[in-house]
Image (cartoon, rainbow, N blue to C red; front, side):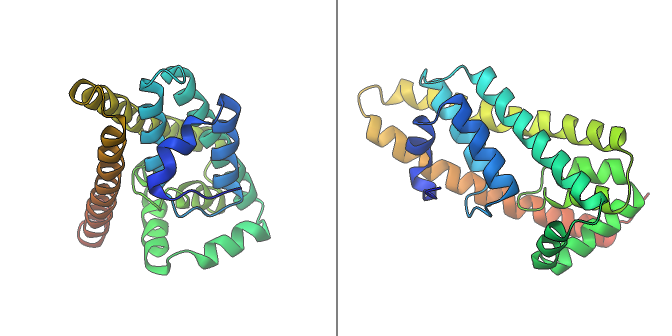
Amino acid sequence: MHIPRVGEIPEYIQHLSYTGIFLWFLLTQLIIVMPIPEEVVLVSIGYVSASGAWNPFVAAAIAFATLILSDGVFYFLSRSGNRYVARLVRRSEGGAFAKAEAQMKRNMPRAVFTLTFIPRLRFFGPVLAGMLKLKWHAFFLADASALAIHVSVYTLLGFVFHKSLAGLFKNVAVLQHALFIAAIVVIGAIVGVVARKKWVSGRGSGGER
C-alpha cells in the first residue's frame, strides 16, 4: 500500500471507493502502523463527501463498522494472549500504556470510552480490555458508543469545512484544498496535544472519585 503524506490525503481518499475506505481502515488498524493520524483520515472523508464523491452517511458508517471490527479483533486476540498483540504492546509508549492500564483497572468501560478520544492511544482500549478480561458486551457498548461520536464529529468537521471553503473560493480549488490541508494538520496537532495533556494531568492528579 502506498502511504501518502498528510498533504496528499484528500486527493488520495477521493480516489477510493466505499470498499477502499473499508480496506484502508482495516489494513491500517490491523497490519500497517500509519504515520497519519486516524482523525485526519476521518476529517478527509467528510471533506471529500461534501464534494459529492460519496454519500457522507454511508462513508461514515463504513469507517465506523471497520473500526468496530478492528477493535473487536484486537480485543479477542488480546484476551487469548496472542503474540502479535503482545509485540505491539511492547513497542507502545511505556508511560502512556501504564497510565492507561491504571485507568482501566479503576473503571474498564469508562477507560475504553475515554481512550477513544485521545489520538494515538485508542489502540490501548481494546487491547487492555481483552487483557483484563472485560466482558464482551460491556466492551462493545463502551467502544461502539465512543466510536459513534468519534467518527461523527470528525467526518462532520470535514464536511462543514468543505462547504465553508467552497462558498469562499468557488473558483479556486487549489487554494481551498491547501487551506483544508493546513487546517487538518493544525487541528490534529492541537487536539492531540490538548487531549494528551488533559488525560495525563487528570490521571496523575485526580485518581478515581
